[in-house]
Image (tube, rainbow, N blue to C red):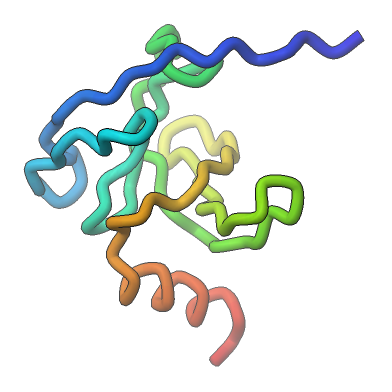
Length: 108
């Protein structure tokens, strides 16, 4: 039987480790990536727990549609351990950066 992920809300300001942007709280749910460069950190095992010791940069490698959640998600690959994760986009994400990632993976 699959264990359900337990979500720990963590809506904190932070400085992006990739681009240096000062990232504000999201205010709706937990912020899990930089809205400017879209990078994240590999710090969670279950959302918000901050118990993953890897700590590598999570590079955005693709954008996909999630029909279950009726939203787009960013696909990340850890630059340190190579693990792949998916997270919902946020309303203030850099739209041009989302398009750039989509174009890079579509061959256009």
